Length: 307
Image (tube, rainbow, N blue to C red; front, side):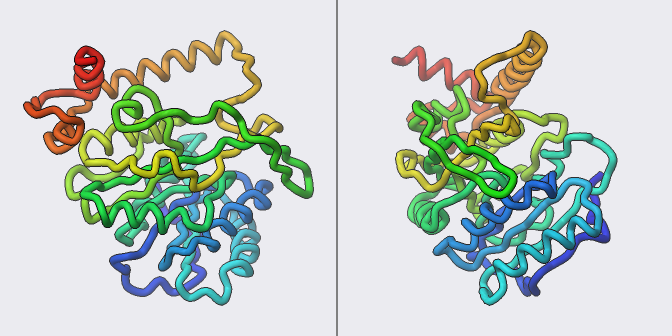
């Protein structure tokens, strides 16, 4: 069970939850990567959207590690009364890789109407949240998507160097494409919690890869989504040349890694086969005769057959 350790701190008084507040959950597991975290948080502070609440979820940090982070980020946030930040720490020994637990830890702390995510090594452009919230207000959707670039990044001891864009990048145009394959990174969308009154929000804690896709399959099967901005770039997703990405980008796959990947894809496919689509989502896909037992896989196959 997750807990808030004694290292949990709030850098500013949050006050009462605001209906228009954006809660952004950032997960962070290695204090030596502080330089990347600072770049990430800088991109959040630069958002034109306010109010903004940054929830930093850390993995088994000591009090001294938390103090280092608090000192660094306080300097960045100081002077902006519409930006708040809370540091939460996962202090349990298991699971060893607590990436899903960190997201759930952040979810339990979120109180604003809007919800978003940003990993410590990625960034958003200043207009990102303003654009996505505008789409949520104009549509009936509970989640609105945009696009992000994939950029190569050289990581040095004292600085980061952004290289060229990776082409092709993430490809997809709408919900059926998303059901077939994940082309929407964690920071490419914003959710409107006021439109999500059904099942509770959570990440599957047994998954340490594709946990964000598993989440999206469940959320988008239940609630309507908006892809109007799917060709509008709102941020960067970095492939780092030091090999520290979760998914290696060298192109070389060892047999054990391939077996693990195949098993993971089987788990994802099982999710497609057991996740039932709501009537509203089916109608948004142009299905005039929704089936209350239709799964994600059923709808993918139906659309493919109709073509």
